[in-house]
Amino acid sequence: MKTLATATSAALGGCAASVILYPLDTLKTRMQNQSKDGNESVIPKDVAGVLSLYKGVGYKATQSTLSKFLYFYAYTNMTNMLLSKNAKSLSTFMNLIVGYLAELFHLPLSLPLEVIITRMQTSKNQTKQSFMQLLQTMWEENEGKLSGFYKGFSAYFVLCLQPAIQFTAFEQVKIIYLKSKAAKSLSALEAFILGAAARSLATLVVFPYIRAKVLVQAESKSVATADDSTPSESIPQILSRLVQEEGVGSLYRGLSPELTKGALSAAFMLMVKEKIEAYVTLAFMVSQMYMAS
Image (cartoon, rainbow, N blue to C red):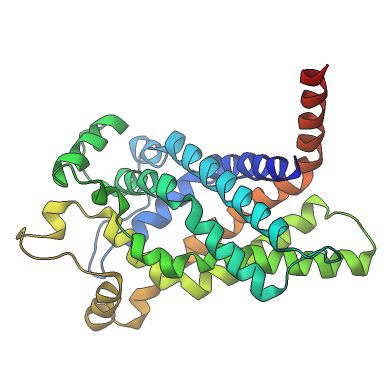
């Protein structure tokens, strides 16, 4: 019951945060996809440009809801299995391991959506493509291979550390803070501030891999490889090329909007989760009682 309530409240928080902050998400993705000599501004200058910032918002909300639900479902289940009888929380190291594995758990379902959304956000094609049309285009580009919808997967061997660090930092500081206040839960403002700080810390650690992942996911096959026999670059190769061609600073292009969007998104999600989790639990309990009667 508690596991399902935790996962559901996190999913609702993730959905709300993704919808509210989607234009900022689009801007940071476009900025991360730019090269050093890119002259095109990512800031919209007309109504059509502003509306383009919302392209794919419904699919992003779906992807965020799905990933947050599966992450917290896996995280809570694994935590409950590993907790000893007298312990109330895992050690910091075990929290990191559980968080890392929980992030891997949802990737088979959420990553294909993320790849499609990234193509939507970075596409310069003036012809509007629906989700299904873009799906068909990408399917044809990759000759019917599902691997095309898992671009950037290798980056997640590092990127899975982001939520692991974020939620471990949040939970550990939350426990210490609540003990010092002798309180049972965080206020909305406390959850917001702590969530933003935890996400910012995690983002700084893994950001170069975030940028490399966006570059991989944004490329169409025709751009990625002029010759079909030429293999696509690996994540480490992309990072190495960026440093050689554009300098170390290029690894952090788009960091400011990523920090802003990421911090606000995590803050909104954790704030909503902390405040509605008790109500969601109560709703599940009432529904169970109703079904049992």
